[in-house]
Figure (cartoon, rainbow, N blue to C red):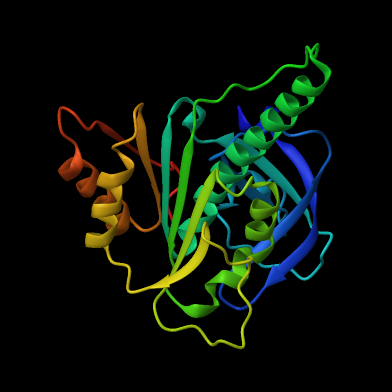
Length: 255
């Protein structure tokens, strides 16, 4: 029950560019999270118990950066993407916030295992546990709706690239128009991390068929507006055959 199980906290940092708002929260106790989960935020108001009835998916208004709040969650589903050999993460616009946690989670686990395997090869007697994920290929494709959207998650993209072993992730940012060459990318471009233009859904469908050729289970995860998720689901169905099985999942929290 929410009244008994809520977590209290404070807004520690606020980032707002006029289009999107991002909060950094401090809580009164550790909070258990998993990739793809989400929370409801309840802000204190002018009346008693106001914060028990007026929750926000994310549209609060306040004037004090240390405003008290209640955190209800986590909600959502753990997709257990580490059990798939090939993982294709797709997002449109703000939907990037729904799939970045999965990419960060998988990349961090891969880096952990690689580090322990290298250590074990040197020491020959390491007994430290490894995750042993099945994932061998992880693609992240993000269709931006306008050029400035990459500023929303620039620090998360940089963090993701820092934990990537350069061959585990393939990240494509699809810009709607040619990017101003004077503006820096939120990551270091290379053969695995790149910006692209005019990459439509027909091209994606062909790429999906190529990815699904690898042995093992393949999953496509979509995050964004309902129309985008529906299109991704349709493409998975169209490209699934008796010899090429592709599963589909969408994040539970919709934009």
